[in-house]
Length: 606
Image (cartoon, rainbow, N blue to C red; front, side, top):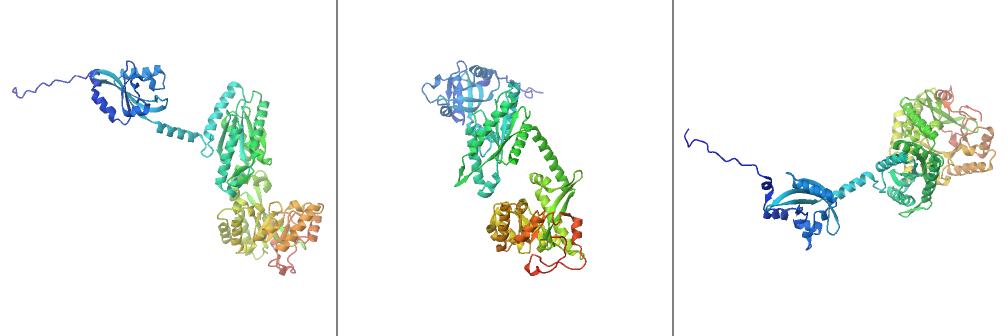
């Protein structure tokens, strides 16, 4: 290898010293600061004073003053001076910078949250602290808004369930430590849905906002009022004393004060509303040692207040929880009962008063419980309504009754009743597809529409009057009959019913019970019969149990009745047997005056 071919020795670079690593020129730093979109400040670590800054820093921290160079790092931040100095020392001794989130303070006293990148630089041989600070006020404001929304109700700005849960948990800890009892008040508006349905959700929302304001004003500053959702509010009270009975008394006193916020009407968008509420009261730790348990017990007490006539307050008692547990178990058994077809149809015959002939029957429902035996609807229907099973059960009744009617019509050995009356609940009637569902059942089962009588109550007819009339007319056009059930217990009058396509009015049993002895009931029944006659409506008296009642109805001109005097409710087998005949026939329409002289089969004495 020649000398020319020998590799040249190259001088290996030495690692830079710290001084070289941070060394830069003042022009470079000035260029960096001038072009930075963030606030840039240079501090002398020896005394902490501002060495230099850019225009963004001057604007952010109000540094455009003659004595700005006398300002120190300590003057511009809110942290403890010892911690601040420790941060500066750490950065100056480190090979790497630090990124921290701190609050800077302008010379005018404004606090500016920033994300600051701190590093050491040597400017012309002088070690300085470089701070590049980015204003994150908008980000912090957004985070605070998100945090607020996570813990507050968007409509009323009250604490929501999440924040209420946290506060109850802390209150339980304090109660255990101090022995001071607290309370929860569970408040639910009475018939709030009626306001939404009749006046619209906008009015309902304004009512909730106004109520939230009134509740806040009625409570102490340390109390919490939260909105759980819908029209449910919960009030958290603390420091009610160490004696349970005294805590209950104080909670009741505050409840009375809260009920006072409903004394004045709510004036909303031209509407004057008088509103009431039902309130459940629990104290802790006596009535529960967890949030879930306390809220459940308060909710249970509130429902007892509603069951007591609404517009009242009830203090939780242990037996209420037992009743609630029993109700839940009953509701679960109801679901199983529907799934396993444990329900049966019974039939209450409707008879003619003159000669006791079978006209038709009202379809009734019974639950054949595997353990409890036959259960009447008065025992289980309230639970069906509470657990949202009414629609499913209503559909089953409609299908089963129409299917039986179709089979009876096809059996030549049976005389089909003039009608089967099926009770229609308000939930069922006001379903958007109610008419279509009835038409589909009629087509599927082959039941004659003219033999189907749908019985509705007055509240069903009052709601959405125009829509109600239209639905009734659609079914009336194919022959379906309509009767108003329990007449006299609602809000309508016979004159209001002229616009409805009704065939029959059924006088409620509460008026029939004492007609032979109570002059007031007698007058009411005679008035109903007279007005119904003028309107061309048939009348059926319900709950007839004595000959005295029947005699009065005959003399007053009533033509039809149902009750234990004529026939008790019959199960399916016995009802079908009543329809079996040999020879003879029923009139086509016993309700029609044209058939009043014909002689259908006698089945019961009048």
